[in-house]
Amino acid sequence: MRFRSAGLSIRRKKETKVSDQPSNAAVNSAEGAGAAPAARSVRFETLQPAGKGDSVDLNFLLDIPLEVTVEIGRTKMLINDLLQLGQGSVIELNKPNTETSFDVLVNDKMVARGEIVVVNDRFGIRLTDIVSPMERVQQIGR
Image (cartoon, rainbow, N blue to C red):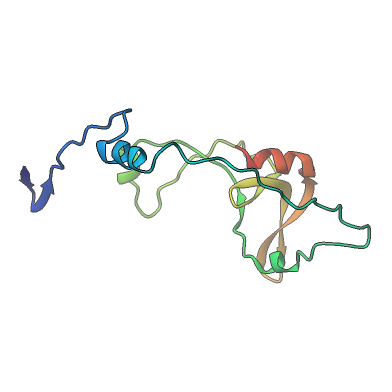
């Protein structure tokens, strides 16, 4: 069955019923081969603990680019209000103007807080608090 709307062509797929029962081909194949396949035991090599001198080279991780963002605030806005924005519009953020500490996010996960500074005519951030390694690991699951 085909539907046509706004220049788009949409095809409806035929429904396929799925059953918990094995197909006739699978049953016939198993019967033709005799009994169920025999299970056999497998032996795995014993793992040896790494020596104290052994270390994993993680230097390849050092060249992975990460997105670092300094967040000055957030807000929620209706689509209608967003569409009405123009040059000179002001968006009110959720942080009071007395707040001097800003969140530092790496790949959208907070890793630190800091204060805005100017270095060589560019904005920067001086870190004042760094999230503990344990908290950083916990954020990965969120």
